[in-house]
Length: 203
Image 1 (tube, rainbow, N blue to C red):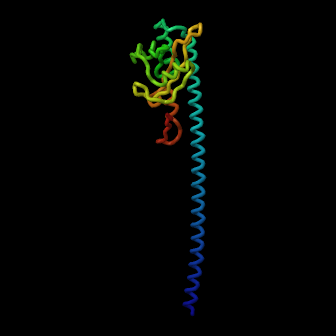
Image 2: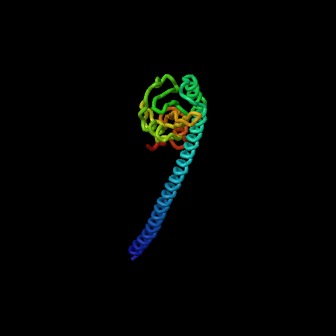
């Protein structure tokens, strides 16, 4: 009889302890799942907010670069003075560092001036979609990212050029590298998230 009582007591204690352990495990598991969901939601919200901030910064950068192009376009009244065109393209490229290359293109899509001159593009006719759109619209233009003829992944901005009497001359445009060194690529690549995080431009 005492042996049976001992076995019954052991069984009851084991069941009680097992119940407590099982309940604790279930609560802990539920807590972990809940916390994991909260962490994932917080990370997602943080990533979305950061992406919006980067997008806003990029928009402001492009708007400022476009204003610089517009100012330069206002200084060019004709395409017959190579010295003036060379000086303005160099000034625009070197002044703030927004653009990696600057070109003046006439209405026949032929390059009239370029900076840097080492590219040896004067007289070359452009066939890119970005150039065709800039000529067709005769309005300020910002392209989608694309791979240029030289193999660089770029964004292209342009401003139309007009004579004092309103005749269309062509455009002045600038390219901004997205993967090689540029002010914009520095903004997009040097961010505070952990190593291995990247920012990818959409085509």
